[in-house]
Image 1 (cartoon, helix red, strand yellow):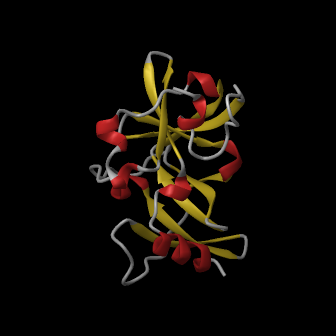
Image 2 (tube, rainbow, N blue to C red):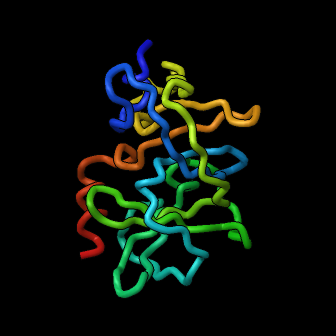
Length: 168
């Protein structure tokens, strides 16, 4: 299988073996990674203002240097059990659909540099699910599997439009 099929986000050109940088983070003892260029900043947990009539995974909004951005609970979005925030909990502010969105994660680990040829496709039983299209590959990292995802694919077009306009 070519590496082009392994990374959907366009990091890999036909047949090339490019160096990819990922920010790894933890959710419920599992390690995930997103492209470093999507991450604008990583902040500690501020006070979050709750918003009525939002999807269950939207924790609310925050004011980040004069810009209002929505905050998403990654645990709720992935259907994982909720846990209390601690000193390691962070918000990863990412560029999603042209707007900024914050994602609550259990901890941010490190920036990892890998070659695109080291990324394996997710198993078809996982990637075949329409709700799992955001999983672009899997990387064996320090005897653990790191799940690589594309945050732009995590939401429906309607959700992306909502998040893209929320901070305006």
